[in-house]
Amino acid sequence: MHRVVVLALEGVYPFELSIPVRIFGTAAGPGGEPLYEVVTCSLDGRPVRTSADFSVAVEHSAEVFATADTLVIPPFTCGPDENGDRDWLPAPLAAAFGLLRPGTRIVSICSASYVLAAAGLLHGRPATTHWNEAEHFQRQFPDVRVDADVLFVDDGDVLTAAGVAAGIDLCMHLVRRDHGSEAANRVARRCVVPPWREGGQAQFIERPVPEPSATGTAATRAWAMEHLHRPLSLAELAAHAGMSVRTFTRRFRHEVGTTPGQWLTRQRVEHARRLLESTDLGVDRVADRAGFGTAASLRQHMVAAVGVPPSTYRQTFRATA
Image: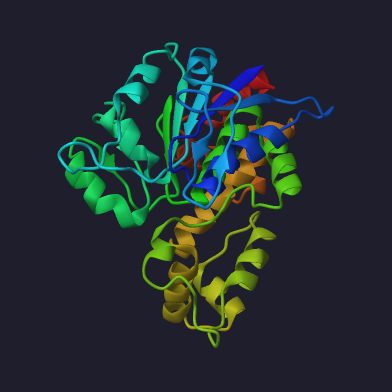
């Protein structure tokens, strides 16, 4: 069974510490069989002080790093080193990384991306962190390609999540990557979270709460999801919302963090992925039902979004299943 090791460091934030335990611990197959084993450790196996007014007791030390298939590092309050800078990689933690087996998947949540960067794991690679830390992070680690707009970055064996609840999005993504959309949807229903959250960090940076009097675009988004099989123009979406195209586009970007066209394409890709995973429909039929019209168009968008064409995606999912 795939083992997920969660590291609790001194000053760990309790909410983020609980995310991988809850998401991976809930993941189960169609017959209810667990898909992951989740263990929590500290560096020395002793209780760990959290950022709140309580500590947590763990049953393992960093020795379990050697058994990890996936390592998750939640954020923590970081004290200074001898130079007064934040010490993201103290010697015991650096030594613990040396216990990891080759190919271990490593995940950071929020500002724990500093740990991965300090360990040299993000050199030349894309990554994200909390938007409020992004500029400082980029100055500290100029060789990392920081994207402050996204909720998470999947770079294969190293993955980074943005602030706080984005850890849920990343863990949900991993369940889907490992076991497909049906398993992820079961987790989402049990945990009462969306299997895929719209937008990115950009929607939270300046005005996180729309004005109470503003007419939102949620109803139009729900309507569009029911009509993905046919062409949907920006003018039609705006008319459904009862707004001008300009107003609709502005409010949509404010609420979702992306343009209507980009959002619509992503929803079509996600619908196509579900059909490829859960049905035997031919690629032409999948393209038609997802609103791409032709298999060539679906192929182009699938490659852009997930890196592989529809046929390869289906084969990969079926092999995983």
